[in-house]
Length: 314
Ligand SMILES: Cc1cc2nc3c(=O)[nH]c(=O)nc-3n(C[C@H](O)[C@H](O)[C@H](O)COP(=O)(O)OP(=O)(O)OC[C@H]3O[C@@H](n4cnc5c(N)ncnc54)[C@H](O)[C@@H]3O)c2cc1C
Image (cartoon, rainbow, N blue to C red; front, side):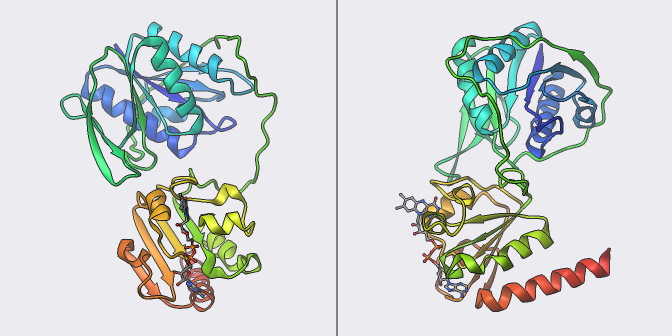
């Protein structure tokens, strides 16, 4: 018996979500006295996963993402390693593949899980993170999708054994022929810190200070829906209920009112800092820290102070 972690990797390197999946798989394997095995796509060196408790890595080489082929490979590995639990992230690839594997292997799929199970019951976020459901699994194989930045990354140094594993080719109706990176900036999904701005910024020409704040903090940039609808910022930055979900450690909301649809997508972030001229802005009710003030005065001062702090402490 084993716990199998599906690790996607990003051009050979491991994303934070990969390490979170590995950490969760290792902890679950330890709790159930089984082995934590990783099925790793597109990384020549799987040894970093040993730091997070993975004792065996099955290395699969492939050039382009193909959902059917990935799912078929996961199915073979699951059966070969007698896995009773398959752990995956909440990436769009994982959300695509998990139902395929679940249907094929007649497994239960439990997405958005936030912690280890207690007595076989998994806690998971529901209703745009407004509630927690406790889900019991009644199948031999369960597929657990980890909500981003919830379980966390936990070191548990372990000797890792790396073995090549064959990709199962599959006659898919679709095929990715190439992948281009839209930007080399930190992605919202992987960011620890997100600097997000809204209509209070008045126009796209004022985003320089948002970019600069993000750069000083090593953060990703995001925006409210109207901002991307108006073309001030790319749609890839739209966060909220109908945009990307944000579940980072520190979320800055600058000139964003805090409408329910925006909050629904960002409320899983651990610490929220709100900068708004209107003391009655709804976002202040959800904020951990609030600054009532004009973004055009507050943000440049914040950048200056952060730069001074960094140079004093470097
Ligand atoms: C079905 C549906 C889905 C939606 N999905 C989303 C979604 O996914 N994401 C999303 O964001 N929205 C979504 N919306 C839109 C949402 O309802 C709000 O309209 C939107 O979030 C408001 O964007 P905003 O806060 O940038 O703008 P506004 O509501 O116009 O707020 C601007 C804020 O900036 C403040 N401000 C003004 N000047 C300054 C200044 N100089 N300094 C500091 N603060 C200032 C104002 O006090 C105000 O609070 C959705 C709506 C619907 C109906």
